[in-house]
Image 1 (cartoon, rainbow, N blue to C red):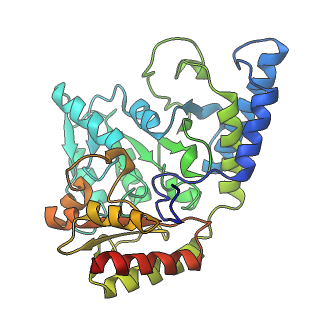
Image 2: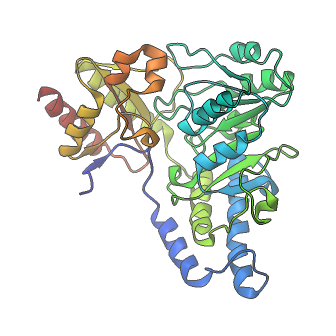
Length: 366
């Protein structure tokens, strides 16, 4: 059963009707292998290259430097592959923190940044962490946190990273299409995923600066200039192109979403909720709140029964019994156990907010 009110847009977004139409047309007419030199292959390759150009326009890069991946997780892994040392924090997506843990276990230097209660990292802390590390060290920071929406000072972090001769990888999966492109300009590599932009699942991209191409994570063919072997799906690429163009030219109305988010957050605070990360600059469509005395996952389940879809953390951590590591690092385990994330999207309406608030009232009374 589909939820009556969908407020879990940070987990995934519903594909645009135009995305579905473009993919259906591609499946009918351009299903060939983009690496084939015959006409059928060239038709497929044209869709892939057109998508590559749209992604480059979206993030202010060059189409030559766009590498297709299976999504944000693979893009993050690809960016970090081969790093001689890593600087990051527990605020990152599991596709970064798990890599950091693996590097640490292999004996490579990994330095974990201190996490303030605000969830906003310090460029000074990055500079301190980089002392005595190799110049090819990678600093991995998400532009906007997937659980709290807290926006990181990418420009400042980029300055200290460049000064140390290190590389900055920015997980921009949650930020692309929501933050101005110039706020991501300090990145040497940048990851994104189509399904966070109302595109299809199963396709993403890593965009790199000229001369900053990553070492291949997979071995195989020469696709994607040898950086990512495997056949690129032209059908998914067609959907990605439409989503990237929409995010570049239209995208969600952040002012409208901020207004609705603020209304929802203020009302929930009146019901006893405490926002997590609200003292920092955040994306306007997401709020993370803790409800004292309530288990976040149980509240999520109760709201689902009432027709409202929210979450208690990262979708990639769903099914675990641990409280959010991000909220734990910021504010402690009790706040994490009681945390719920609500994220809005461009299709969210004022009626959705009213219905969600009514569901929260009913669930909290139970």
